[in-house]
Each structure stands twice: as structure tokens, then as C-alpha cells.
Length: 267
Image (tube, rainbow, N blue to C red; front, top):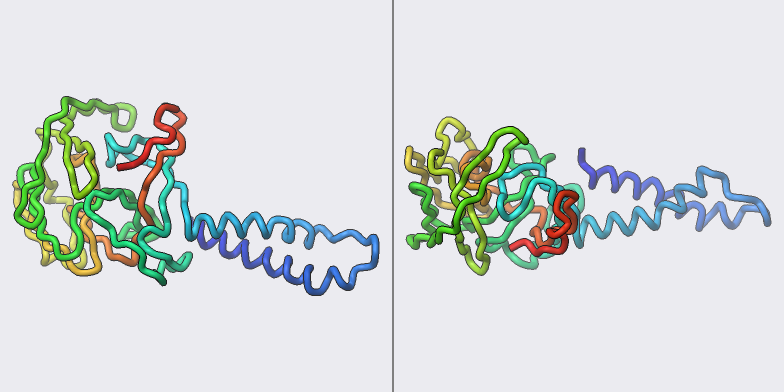
């Protein structure tokens, strides 16, 4: 469901009624005559819809985390806020960037439109920016010839789908200015080769049983989940084009299962 499109249609419909009331119907109404319901309700809702539309389109937008691909940074059920203007001012619905502000940086947690189905929003961490040479071999990430250090940080166990018990090793990693935790399952290969799809600029990548090597094309980004071995990400469906960017995740504003997470920043 394209919520932005629905909001735009409601805004236009109620806006037309509000404008007609202000410019015509109010002037031709007899003193004491009440507004008909088909004018009263749309005209009353128009300012509310306008405020919500502007906030969601240009400032912040709420999202809910549906899967564990970003564990342990984000938990299933986290409600987060996404900064819509940090990567530029974009037209609602079509998502075309009008004004450039900042470019995504390595380590930032980004919401974007899934390249295979732009109606779906995904959230992952930016690992590679345009021009980067990425190597992911035996669970170790190298960017432009420099291996990203990993520091062991104990274990992290969780239930997947409420049934499967998953045991992982947790590591501390730093990409750019963003220290964070990643999860690794020793028994799972770095890339499930059978899951790699044909995607635009597929020739920029080479895969083998130990991992992959990719050159990030211009105006594209390479993203991975923090739960490295349980994430559908750029390893499988390719690079994220600039036109698919939605915004940067920055705050957890609610979690029904753990109120202590409310107000936590997303790093």
C-alpha cells in the first residue's frame, strides 16, 4: 500500500472542498445556515491532513521493524523515526530529489525502496558508497583495501519466527563514524550462492564460496544487515540506486515489549 499516494489523494480532495468553501460557498450562504456535512467534514480534516502530509513527506516518517535482519541494533517490533531531509528534499510519491543536502555515509542506517519491488521499504546499514571496492571474505569485510576490524563481544541468542533458536557470535564493528554490533553464525556461509540474483551492474561483482567482491557504481550504494547471516541485502539483490533512498533512521520511539528502548538513538 502506497501510503504517501493515499495521503496525497486525500489532501487534494479535502483541499478542493476547503478552497471552495473559503472562496465561494461561505460567501453565498445565508446567515445562520449550517454547512452541509460534505463540506464541513472535508474542510475540517484538510488542515490535519496537510500537517501530516508535510511532516511525513519532508521531515520525519515512522516505520516498524518487521524482521530480525538488523539485530542486535534493531529488534522486531521496534517503531523508529526516519529523517526524510538529511539526504535531500524529495518530491512525495515519485521520490525524485529536488535539493541535495547530504550523501549517505558508511555506517548509517538507511531506509530505502527495495529495488526489486519499490512498493516495499527496507532498512539496512550502508556498507559501500559510490566508487568503493568491497570484499567480504570468510565473514570479514574489507573496504578499499582496508580490513574493517572486528572485536569479539560475547554471544547473542534469539528466537526466529518464535520457534527457531538461533545462537550467534556478536562482534563490535566501526564503519565511518558509527560503531555498532554485528551478528555472525559460524555454520552459515558468507553468501548463499543459490540466492544471488541477476541485478543491474551484476558484472561489478564476483562471488565464490568464501564471499564476494563488488565495485559500487556511481549513484548507487551497497547495504547489509547487521545480522549478517540472516539478512536479505545487497549481496543477493544488488545495489540501491540513489532514487530509491527514503531517509536515515535515527530514533526508536516505541517498543511494546521493551519500554526501555524508547528514546534510544540508532547508530
